Amino acid sequence: MQNQISELKVKKYFKVTETSLEKIRKSIIKGKEKEAKEIIEMSSNYVNDAHYFYNNKDYINAFAAINYAHGWIDSGVRLGIFNVKDSKLFTVK
Image (cartoon, rainbow, N blue to C red; front, side, top):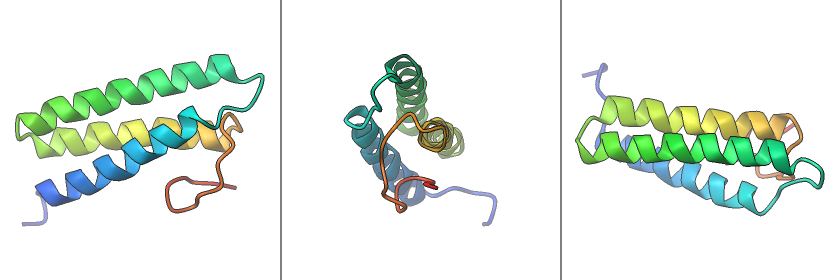
């Protein structure tokens, strides 16, 4: 069915987002620590929410939450808060 999200797809997005989160934690641009902290905190909260939904077999909400997490990460990259160049993990300029 096209209106379902598979467990495999959710796992794939967990891997991408959690890897991205690890990388940005190590790539904060000097002077942007305050903004980075907020983005990392929000992303981490959404990842935690996604795990909660996933563990309850609610793959639709897990997928939504993990994508919100990655959206926060990508916005920080685009705004120049993190110094990353990996176009497979991030929306880079």
